[in-house]
Length: 262
Image (cartoon, rainbow, N blue to C red; front, side, top):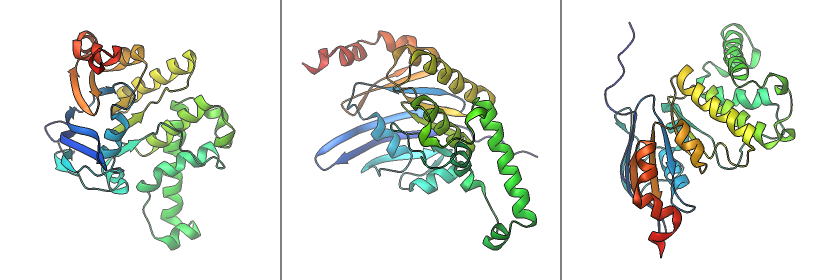
């Protein structure tokens, strides 16, 4: 009998602040991400968007506030512990193992799912061999899903930028995350590559049921794929709501047009 999903939002960020010396990069930010949502986090350069994602994923520790995942506090957890809870992410700058093949890069996303003794794994006997085949089968499913079969044996460092971003998404999906954090997944892409990535983000949400929070600068993309938009400016949250409402919010218009910065 399957266990019921816990009630409440998947992710809760309450009054979180992050600072570097005297610089307050995130200032008392609160937000909720519901199960199955696609939430976009937007704002001008330097607004604190990536810093907030780094706090959620454990790379930075807030000096104030609380972060909870599935109703349990995880404010002070380190990245491996956060990943073990079911949170995966991609980065602004592609962070692949450039000398490894696409397949091997994606397989690293399965590491937290691998169980068994070192001896059995080293000898590739019995349970270790079955486990390896199961993980390979799941990775092959991701490769088919993201339509990268033709490059599965290619070294990641030899791929064009747009395909590297897709491989990084594949590695994150290989971890079977409940929450996927995407930091500018479409940065540096041409129009066709952006259209493909938009489709993959939407399909990930619909087919795998993955909750997604993403940072994105392309407002067309944000308005097309997001259920809700959170806007940061100078480290503070200035808007939070449906895309159509946020687009008309005067505080958001001021932040992007520079009026509020005069």
